[in-house]
Length: 479
Picture 1 (cartoon, helix red, strand yellow):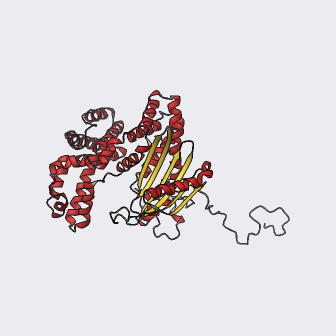
Picture 2 (cartoon, rainbow, N blue to C red):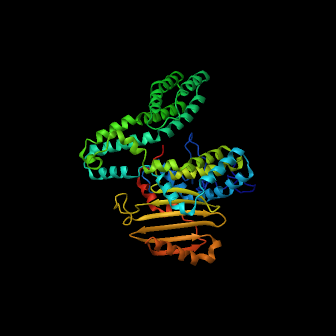
Picture 3 (cartoon, one colour):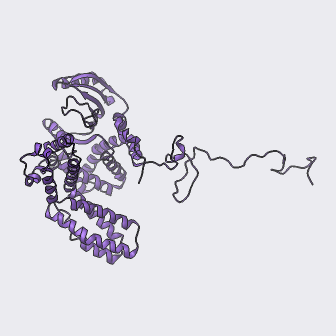
C-alpha cells in the first residue's frame, strides 16, 4: 500500500517518485589522466596524446609524432645542457680524485689531458670541432654543390645523390659493423641454444675492425648476404618466430645492404659515370677516378676526426657511466647526458651543434653551441659569409664562475648580441661589455646592439631558432 500520508520514514530513492530523476551516472572529470592501455578502448581524458583534446582536428586518430616528441625534448634541453656541465666539472673531477674505479679514473685523467688547450690554440680547437661535425665540407663537396645547383639534368642530379649515398655508406661502414656486432649478440640470445651457437660461429668469421672501403668490408658484406641472412631466414621460417627476432633480422638486412653499397670499387665506378657529363667535367676536369679515394680520405672532416680523439674518449666515458662504472647513483645522470647528445644529432635538428669541453690554465670549461650559418637564405644564399645571416646560441660554464648564455645574429659585418652572466659578475658587467666591444672591433665587426646582463633566464634552443618548428606542417606520423 502506498504511503500516502507519509507517516513513516521514507525509504531512500522512493520519495517523489513521480518527479523526473537525474542520471546517476557522473561524467568523467576531464582533469583525470587515465592509464594508457593499448588493449582497451578507454574514455577520452586529459592525456597529452588524446586526440579528443584537439577541437579543430579533422582526423579522429591523431597521436604524437616523432617530431612532436623531438620538440618536447627540445624544450627541456637547457636543463640537460646545464647538467652536462655539472657532471663535467663535479662528477668527473670527484671520480678522478676518489679513484672509484681505477680503470675509470685513469680514463678520466686521460680525457682531461686530451682537452688541455693553451689560449693560443683555442681558435684552432673550435674550428677543428666544427669541421668534425659536418661530413660534407671542403672543396670537393663545394664543387659537387655547384654542379647540383647549376645543372638542369634530372639524371645527373639523381646520380650525384646516389654517389653521395655510396660515399656515406662507405664512410660509416666501420660504425655499421660495430652495430652489427652488438646486434649479432642480441640475435644469439633470441634463438635456441644450438641455433645460437651456429650463428655465433658464423659471426666469428666477420671482421669487425675492417676499414672503410677495404677488401675485408666486402668480405663482410658477402658473408652476411650469402650465409648469415639465409640462415636466419630459414630459422625464422622453421620456428615461425614472427616477433622481435624477425624485426632484428630485417634491421640486419638493411645494414648488410649498406655494407654492400660501401664498396670502394662501386664508388669509383659511380664517379666515373658522373665524369661523362659536361657539368662534372667543367669542375673536375683532370681528376683521375683512381685518385678519388685519396681525395675523400683527406677532406676537412676526415682530418678533423683523426685529430679529435677526445670525442671517442668522452663517448667511452659516458657509455661506461651508463653501465655503472661511475657508481649506480650516477647512472641516471649519464643517461640524460647521452639523451642530450643523441637529441642534438636528430634528423629534425636544422642547425649545427657542437660541444666543446676544455681545460685551460688549469680551469675547466664546457661550451655548447648551436649555429645556423644561413638563417635567412634556406641554404641558397650567397657564398660570401659576410652577406649571409648567421645566427647562434652559445651556452658555456666556467668552473668556479658560473653559467653564461650568449645569443647573436650576424649580418653584413654587424652583429646584435646579448649575453647573460652569472650573478657573481654583477660588478663587472660594464667591463665585460667594453671588452666584448673591443674584441668585435679588432675583428672588423660593428656592434649594432649589445646587451650584457646577469640573472636572466636561460634561453631555450627552440626559442632561439624558430625554424625548428617549420616541420610542424608536415605529416603527423609515428611508427
